Length: 564
Image 1 (cartoon, rainbow, N blue to C red):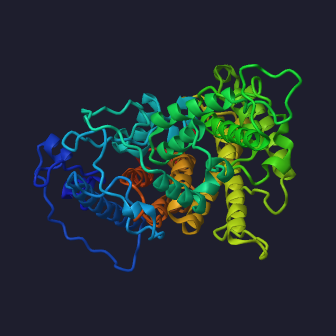
Image 2 (image 1 turned 135 degrees about the vertical axis):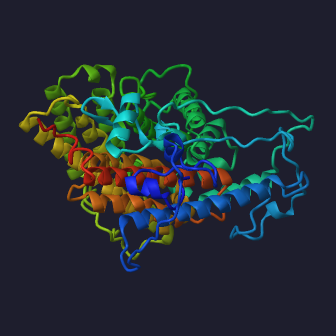
Image 3 (image 1 turned 120 degrees about the horizontal axis):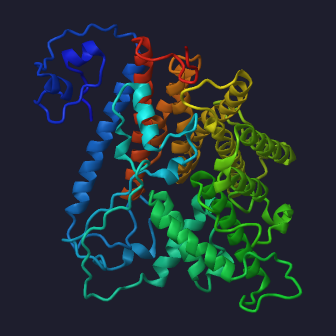
């Protein structure tokens, strides 16, 4: 991390001061053969709080979190084999009396303590998406890397994250113990499931059916739970494998067929009772909706398509209304958007064709939005005080479901707005100005994606207090992606009228992530949410540097206009 105070030379030149080892000269002084000194006297108005002060304060907070994290990691690695059981309940869990606390100590299975290594899962493209362009340049490409560096006038430290290379994580040495693998007792499993049903996570991820679980936990639910766990920990590659297995398994069970079976039914699909069929169909819709999220975000082909799946009952609100974490009709629009904007043929569109497709999808999205009940209808602009307006007669559990439906609908709508409209930045050539009429259309679409990003951050700031640690998945799913349109707009227009406000919104990620209670979160989830905060704060640093580069007269005020 850069020092809190730049040396005299770097301060005078207004460049980044990089010191690899304390006591050594910085990179710039060392390369120029200069003496690296810190002799200047800093006089600053204590009542004046600049953007630089905010960034430095947030950087200090990140350092404090890093120190606390390192201490926690040290304590966890010093635990002996006879330490707490992997099935034991954390002391802070509010269900104090449980069968878990009465179990004997069990040593970790499968990997010996001496060889156990901590896997590192870095923030990668599945978190922020791949649809980021400026005048035909892919922002996550090598040219995009250089474009960011030129615009900010700084070294780009985004290589600390996997968004450019997206390599597979290295596998540490693993030794298998001769001790037989022991499954947890049934009482422990039942207790953990009961905690799940009572948590807000069960509303966000409705994978289990209480009536069906009493018999057995089948493989289909296992893959769903595994996928959700990996997704929450930022393990995108592992989550993709688990999700693909879950999709295939749901189709093997006939979930891609509607509840009203056709006269001739495939022979390989088993027969179930009505409750089980409804549950499998619900799991199919969960797969279908999240599949469209990933396809639109990453440009990868969808696993489930309307060509091979019957989605005719998406309109049946009596079956799916409020029972799913995503809206089925909106998912169908996202499938259409993925086919039109993210398929290989999308790279052959002319600029006029691309803008026409974006307008067509925007019309479909607006038609869907107006069809939603007025009480839940999503909006593009969200104020800082999100009002739910729920009936007082609802139970606490029903109120939570209603809030979850409302928030998910709002975030999903904003997510779709961003992924449709941000692609207009493909238009143009880096060396030429866009025609005035085309520039106006591109600017209008980009403004929609930027406003959607602002609204996502305002929502995240409020739901953390509502969902507490269960907000982790929502923040990790939306925050990195929502940060990109704001960052790109600031980089293009560092001194624009909205730049300061957008920089403040980006900086709010530190406050949002700090509000997530961590006492009951596993270390992988704490590290993941910390890395998201660090990623967004790196975007803040680059945005701040771009503004200073403009003020020094070292670049144009607006990168989308070439002055000849």
